[in-house]
Amino acid sequence: MKPLNYKEIELILSEADLTGSKIQGVIQNSFHSLIWELYNHERGRFLFYTEIGTQESRLHIVSNPAGLGKTKKLQRFVQFARKNIEGSVIVNCTQLSYDRAVVWELNNHGTSLKLFIRLYSGPGANIIVTDSENRILDLLLRRPQRNEATGEILRIEERTMPDKEYTVREHSGSFNEFIENEGRQESRETGLSVLRAQVERKKEHDISRLLSSIASLNRTLQANKDYEELKYVADLLSSQSYLVKKGDESITVTDYGTNTTLTLTLDRKLSPGDNVSAFYDRYHRAKGAYENAVSEIKRLEEELKTTEEKYEKLLAPSEDENTDIRRLKAFIDKAQAPVQRDEAPGIRCTSGGFLIFAGRNAKENDELLRHYAKGSDMWFHTRDFPGGYVFVRGKKDKTIPLDVMLDAANLAVLFSKGKNSSSVDLYYTYVKYLRRAKNGKTGLVLPTQEKNLTVKPDRARIKRLLPDEV
Image (cartoon, rainbow, N blue to C red; front, side):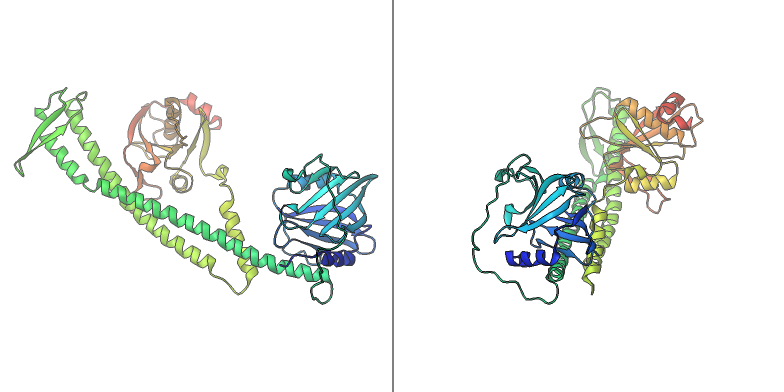
């Protein structure tokens, strides 16, 4: 939109005739724009729009308020204006000579104030409130480098002649309505362009994240593809474990199938049987990581396809720009909205500064796994009894204390079929080491790199964590 020149501002103010109007309210429409709710006896209640510091900077009477929303969070200046300006009467509305600056002289129940609206280009643009001596009380945009801050004296330099000749652009009817329509059209076009750019960035981020995850899982596949060889080596060690003595650091075993020998490194602190178990553990971990990666790659590839289709549909233009703006804005608002963790299903409590959340049935387990649990969270589940999943929210560079783990384990027992047992075995691992069972029931997962934990149900812990459950 072409900036208003001083003659056009003069015409707008002449048509608006704001002198004598009372300021009944201030609405923040955006970071750079305010709507003033005014009232006078001749016109009744009406709205006056001011926007500074943008390509659509303008001021005019609002004939159609449709589409002029409100920001969710108020700026400091709006809070000041509502407290100190609402209720004021505009006793005089003037324009600085040959300038794009407007001054409202206000009377707020006997207190004289001034409100300056500067539609300049660059850092000079601002809305400033001063006392009668031009001392700044508050301003929409702080400009300390220009000595424009609370308590400073506002410098006012009036021109004695225009810098060049200006004319009012061609229009029909009210110039206020003409500028309003021009600004709305420009705002729609700019707004749509900005929204599309935001959605494109979100699309790029989402797709990049998925591709990165798929690439990482492919590296995991490559690193663990030879898991069957690990089993073969473990079988060789198991069949010749009689040769191992505790304290041995290595052993040479014979592969009778190929008539070759293989030297294996042992843990001298482990017994022969435990060394064999350690080799099988490596096999199981590699197999679990490989199968989990295969399953996750398939899921992520399907999600990638769905994501690409979603954005293609979202960014496809319709015949109505307003519809496109509403659709894209709704998507951006939803994407930027904070996750409401309090709405998570199941039970929540804290222990030692760590958040614990638990599912009580298959549906809650699945919901927590899909939408709330993170890879760095610790997962607990009873080994021999069906029951709920319990998670401890991980903290960066923090190890989960044993006492917190015992609290989580007791909750897992509480929400299982083994809650009345005298002793219950559990396993735990990080969420990133869980993989969904192929064609399994809702929420069913297979853990890898899991560790064992045995607890005796402790009602005192449960009472401390969940007083209403005991």
